[in-house]
Image 1 (spheres, one colour):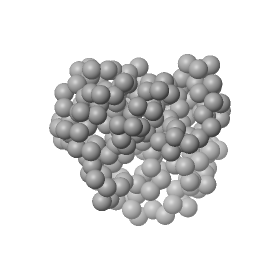
Image 2 (tube, helix red, strand yellow; image 1 turned 135 degrees about the vertical axis):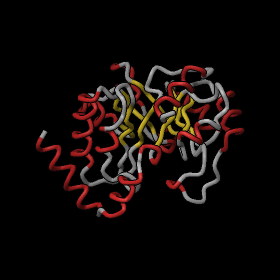
Image 3 (cartoon, one colour; image 1 turned 90 degrees about the horizontal axis):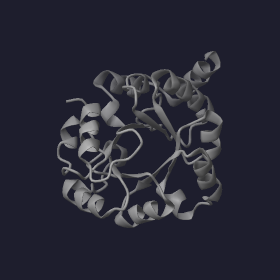
Length: 229
């Protein structure tokens, strides 16, 4: 079973399904500095959450991803920047938990309502899930579901607590963190409305390539790809 098939199965059996993609690729500037090859391998209908917050070439990368997403019929959500989402014609906005807790959200939520765009929110606790529901988010990305290389040493939520928190949540919940075809099977039936992953989309060849590349070179590649499209 592929990760995409596992995500579709979870969404079909979830207590609360959501109107967005059941499978999301979450970009990460450390683990996936150039996400374009992984995005190009996503099935049509899947989604991309553009993070890369600290990347000097974020606009160029975002432009390249938006072009590729349209070509591949993927759903694009931009994290933390509604203006960039509007500029790219993205289908949605993703809120980091800290921004949802302390940020000025009125303009972002206003754009979302006007465009009827998707809204997801990163959550790491039941309190954050409650906040996401209050804000009217379409879904929460709850993490880390399992041990993950993105947060080495962080205590994972685990399948039992994930199921309990998701059951009590007032909105659909997607699992993020340590997701593979094998760990996805450990999620309680009906708990997750889908899967969000970084490493789950990276094969061994891509992993070796990522480790051998320097981030400035990846940034130059983004700019070149965006300029040529």
